[in-house]
Amino acid sequence: MAESRIANFGAGPSALPESVLVEAAKGLLNFNGTGIGIAEISHRSKEFGAYIKETANLIREQLDVPSTHEVLFMQGGGTGQFSAVVLNLLARHRLLHPDLPEHDRILDYVLTGSWSKAAYTEAMRLAHGATVRIAADSRAHSADGKSFDGLPPHSGFTFSPNPALIYYCENETVSGTQFAGEEGTPTSFPFHLLPTDAGLLPLVGDYSSSFMSRPIPRLADHAIIYAGAQKNLGPAGATILIVRKDCIVDVDAAAKIGGAPVPISLAYRPYAANDSMPNTPSVLAIYISGLVLKRNKALGGVRYYEEFNRRKKEKVYEVLKEGEARGVFKSKVREGEGSWMNIVFGVLGDGAEARFLEGAELRGMKGLKGHRSVGGIRVSLYNAVTEEWTDQLVAYMRDFIAEQSE
Ligand code: PLP
Image 1 (cartoon, rainbow, N blue to C red):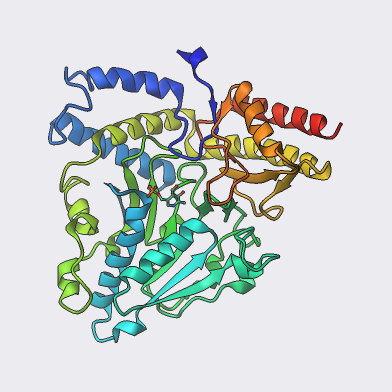
Image 2 (spheres, protein in one colour):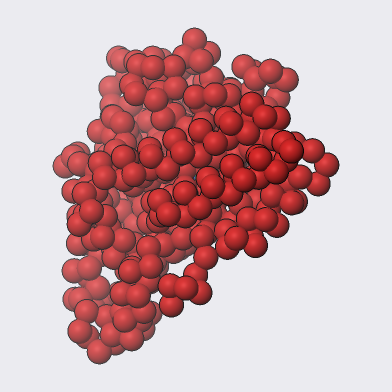
């Protein structure tokens, strides 16, 4: 099987570890000795009930999720959460501050790329009289005033004193920036600037494309962390949530105070009350995510992946820099502000980008074309991307630089 598979640098859905896929193929025929395949078994079976709990626990264990937070599985992907976080946290704010005029409920958004911008746009659709504001916008700090080519400086953040929601995207999959720096450094998320006298903070982090790739800084200070499974964890279909318990509220009680009723499929409470199964969950995606998590655990969890992913990204950024010095590549992100997971750059010269992609494919490397909205090249280095694949790509990039500069 191995020889027919190629190096897949796709941005998501993306590569999964081969050993997991072999195991999953067995589970498709016979899940945990039940004689029924995982795509066929009832989610109400005791075997799947135990499995989903075990999978949630593997996440809890590997990320050190405290008992103040629940680990939940939902559906609807990251996009579903663009809506759900607004609806659930506005409901929470209404219950906490019933007498506040709706326009004084503030939703603070940090804009660093197309995904946080999409979340912001959805918040404007759903705000229902609440005020959606921009707490920072990296475009304001770019050379041309309109590109998401870096992170906002800490001096560019202003948070509201008692917001209903504070939103950021930790890793921007399309523009290739990430709050990846050590806490307190300019490329970290500025936790120290968050309001301090507002009680438990309604801080939401979109971790869709960096979940499980390294430890989550200040996880316990978040209200909600969410991620679609389809980058670092498993197949598309499962959305993982880590939700602080005070954010799991009675949305119907809140709707009596203001706002529209919340669709039941987006309300957190039924999921928390029913082991993530108020209705049929994405059984297969959760199953494969569980297999990946078991493998992660055996390897050493997020600390292992942090070092592994650090080595891979350093190799790619190094060769990218060499290419920049020779006028062959051009990074789309300011130095030091780039993502570990998605490295984006252009290839300079007429037709050079197409030649780069063709050459990569001839050498058995796929998934390198940049997102359709920004073009260029995007190298995604998720957990399942091996060091061998990375070395293969780096060697190719070096050969390409040599050829182009002849
Ligand atoms: N957030 C980020 C950072 C993403 O990369 C994506 C998709 O790639 C999304 C949100 C949207 O996720 P979904 O396609 O699961 O709705």
